[in-house]
Length: 358
Length: 256
Ligand SMILES: Cc1ncc(C[n+]2csc(CCOP(=O)(O)OP(=O)(O)O)c2C)c(N)n1
Ligand code: SF4
Image 1 (cartoon, helix red, strand yellow):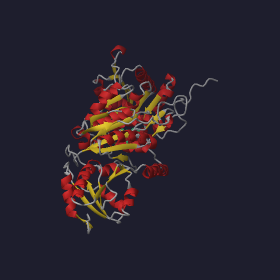
Image 2: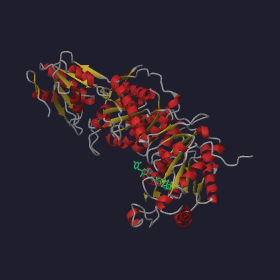
Image 3: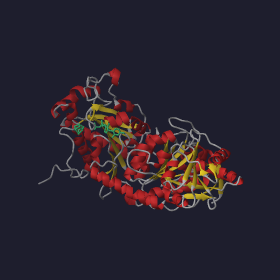
Image 4: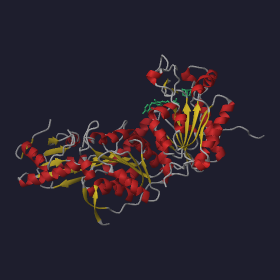
């Protein structure tokens, strides 16, 4: 396919359509409004497409529950406060083992916050987000090209594991225009037996999250957990950037990783051998891959657009085997690569290593 | 000998968990009988609520997807839009529909979603132990209105059916009850009509059922049935509240 210049939010919409998404419900919120707008137009053009501007984010996610149960590839999108409202339904999707794709174009928070790019929803996204014992696969794209690729992959992952998948990006990713090539989507593999379409002449189907018997509920929890373990073993993704000869490894995702790459260029110009470890799957976090790096690297620097969320996963991965520094800017402030480089110069001495974050 | 009474095919062989004299069990049976008589078991999808009817999926021998509290009409919307030729019904209590799920219900009705809502109005939150509902009567004592519902503190009982008649997306709205054999037969006719309207793509249909909850009303089943006649139906008058002639039906809630 041809290379096109496209805004991030629209890239998600187009990738979803190409992946066979035929149901979208959502409620407007900046900075992701181009997604529902784009979907409202495109779903009119494709056969069987349904777009609903719902009365709320809660309604949207529960419409997605219904559409997914009926067998559709279904998606909803929102930004931070709206994603909080969707959590009831996301928890339901996980419990009922229904596939769906949820996009969160994060903004500054907590509360109503602002509409600037931020990464403060990392905990919410990677720890399940709603009530109960479950996980959501979380993908953290860093370029428009990745928005396209990962949106398509999100639908495949959701089907393969019958679980909700979240695209976690921010207003900058959503608003920015970049060249994109849409890959050929894979044909959908999703057995009819999982779809609820009326019993016909056969046995009736039940989809439910309610399991009153504690032992049965426990067994269901373990069933989910076994699935999450397979995901954690098989689906981690990450990118290494200039890490081969690096002495200091930055860890950052999404927009943060873009800034980190700029900082690395500057640091290298100043003679500091810095590289990047970029988690692409935020859950499952590429823990083993990061730990592997700690066999030769003893200095890590976490950078995020929040006050210290990713750094917890990095600590869990490195388990005290390496020193961990930290820089974060929350609230919708987007630091420049120069700022990050300056912070690192202050915290990092090639002889003594990184000043540890307490 | 001819068999004149048996379990509807659309019902499973499961003992109800409902209290003696409860309106849920009667209503379940009526829905199942209608599904049988219309021969739509194979194309029907039910959406039970959180509420005393939370286990309804065990009793109906049709496809069922449990909704979160109040979200039934949203989930039903998602199903129906993807499968427009299926019969989709959402089964909801008064807390479910008129409180936590009022937005989902109101907007599904306003969009004219071509679904049927069976609305059990028992003037309390049955499942959670008899708390005040949006439909509790003024003066009604519940576990959270020990001095009786007071309009200035708690608002007035919401007449959902009347309010929904104002929405152009609604095609058929009837309020019934299940407190006597005659009333039960009427309710069955209403449910059937609602399903028929749905098959005819006429838009949103709602059957409200004044339903006894002897346990939380602290009455015997007979007293409960009497209370519906003497108190509840004064605020919630029975009858057809809206019935759009076929030509005028909006054919709403459809994706072109
Ligand atoms: C989000 C959420 N809040 C609260 C509850 C607890 N809850 C379950 S059913 C119910 C009320 C049931 O009352 P109603 O809808 O009138 O149905 P009934 O039990 O009377 O048939 C409540 C509050 C819940 N399940 N989910
Ligand atoms: S508590 Fe009330 S509504 Fe619930 S089953 Fe008992 S009688 Fe029926």
